[in-house]
Length: 114
Image 1 (tube, rainbow, N blue to C red):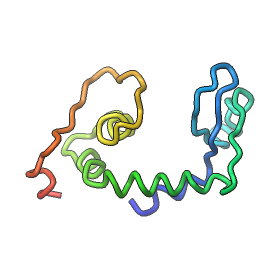
Image 2: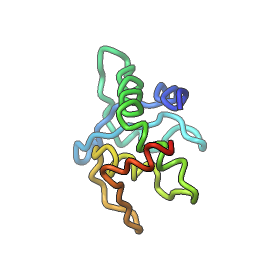
Image 3: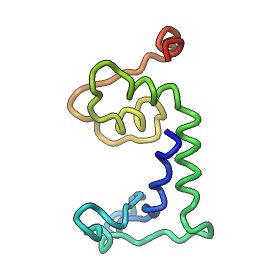
Image 4: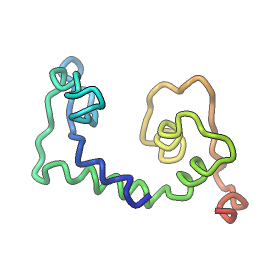
């Protein structure tokens, strides 16, 4: 998990031109330059987007047990990123994927098992 946030250097803060919605955009995708680059205005900041890496590390630290629980499940977890963002950390409010997911609020047995 220590290396998860290293890739944040490939992302930048931006806002969509059409509605002003904030996003984090990866510059280069597997197919080349991200096609959304022309649809956004990049948000300039003094730290050259180093704060993204810092925030990533904070999320990992704050929700480490929840993240481990999701990724260490016996069965592969679909939409793990969504589950961490919406249910564990409560940061995202995007529409839910097809299947519902709930995280037990005080699942001591699972925490001890980790």
